Length: 96
Image (cartoon, rainbow, N blue to C red; front, side):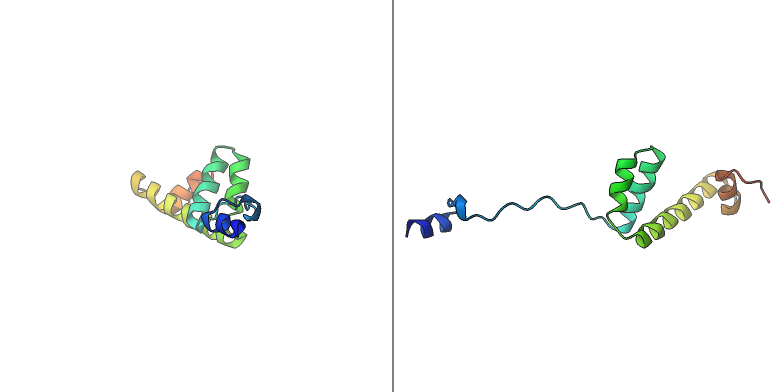
């Protein structure tokens, strides 16, 4: 009888389920891409690996591609240049 009362009150630690280990963080693909790219830029392999585990490789690839497109567009507007000129410049390619 006392065991039942302890369980109801939450004081029966012997019957309490074992604590689950913390689950890895699951972000959306844009959060994963932003974290992954910034970690790569800062040469933080641990953070890049962690972000890569948040989503599938395909989703991460899509997110990184979307981030690259948005970054090139933003830089092109800032520099008053075409996105193609900016992208080629960032990659060290000659202008067309």
